[in-house]
Image 1: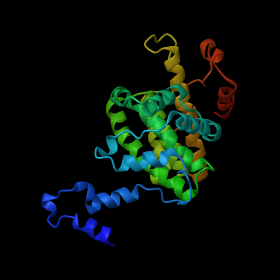
Image 2: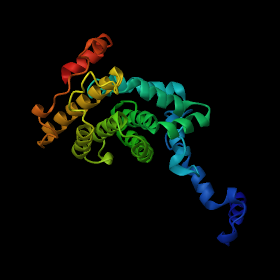
Image 3: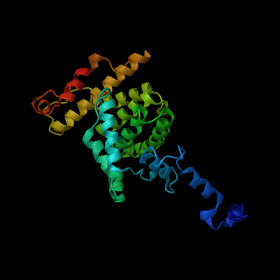
Length: 282
């Protein structure tokens, strides 16, 4: 009790000239809320993502602060996404997500800042993969998984503002696809039907539903293939969501002239067995 009384004395009466900030009541309460709320007998937390979120939501720079994660754990999130989610809702731009995860897990804070400034879509995709996995993984109870995912969703939406300011192409479609997949598993992201409708409208406005002439040298074969994957992935999500909800499709079949991914000598030679399965879904 004596210690408690002495601690209470450290709380200044006049908050305008607050001193001893490390002992102020708000600071003490904030510190308590950072402690793990699980079994006190446990020797460790569930995983380091809890620590990352705890530090992130209390960081003085707010939502623009990096939510850091260890590389090994980030890779586990990616592997779980590929095994559980990408199998049903293709197709994750793997190279871009890996680049985003490298920036998030880098020991060098400047590496994250550089990617966020230059290519924010990579950061968004990486965080969104991390946000989706707790919703589908048996590792997280429903309530804990939802809390983790909603915190990550808030981070993603802040980054998405930057994406829309800087990007206007396939990266936006790929970001929206991941947001749609999140909304399928968690209503915190809003209506999956409205989101997929927005993504499809963006595809149509960019002309991804029509086949680009091979003579158009302004578009590389790799870029053309990315556009195909982006459109058909949205198309599949549109059909699945609209059929389940009894809502109208965003585009009719007769309006689609773009080829399936893998059509053409260059593209077909790069297909993996998983790609063939995804194309069969389309």
